[in-house]
Length: 317
Image (cartoon, rainbow, N blue to C red; front, side, top):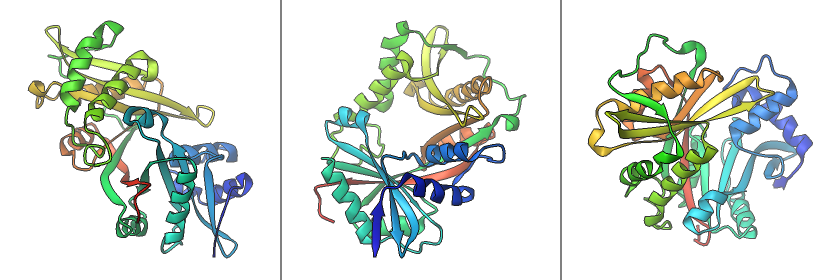
């Protein structure tokens, strides 16, 4: 029989026990509280939203449902995100767990859910698929550590890189709308999402980044013509013992694709990030081969992949 419970002390005990499996960063110099902070950062969970799953007095996993406020505003729907973690000893996920998640989301008035599942949990991916919860995308995340960067890697000297200013907005808007109009991401493939809102999502992302959400916003130019831009954001966790830069939004004029602009901006972001951070990470769609080639070129390595499922909550399974 499954039991679902919220218990911060039990949650912390369970997470620390499974730290070697969960953590993708070194933990040898971290205390218990810092390891817990790191685990929750990696899993994307918080104490208040996390529900433990217990079978025969043993905790076998957890799930967390949180409101996706920004996405809800963009798409005009109450949207939620589900994070999963199950111990390796668990052989399967049951329908009762999914039913509990859907019931909880309905109680929160959510109309749509996004499930992010580490692809190493093959049985979870298989179960969701068999439950008619459709997989809309697979993301691959790459990472490079400061000590791994080839210091001799050079930028394209023909291209000028600079930081953005508020005066760049109109040109940035034009590039964003051109790059992401009918962009076939997971939202585009979901019939529950209106296509016209997708480009607006990227436009809002760019606008927020320009107004301070991003810690670094670089622009690529040639002869004073803007060719593209990219962003990144820093995270300092575990009392700043682990400092991470996450690559964000990137776009290039379609007429300029194939010139290595994305690669040049990526190298610039990595070098800038290592002034104050130790890790640079970025994710992309599994099908985006060109982006992954750029990441491999600069020395980045894949460390995680996530299958993303969508469910309109009002649909019957």
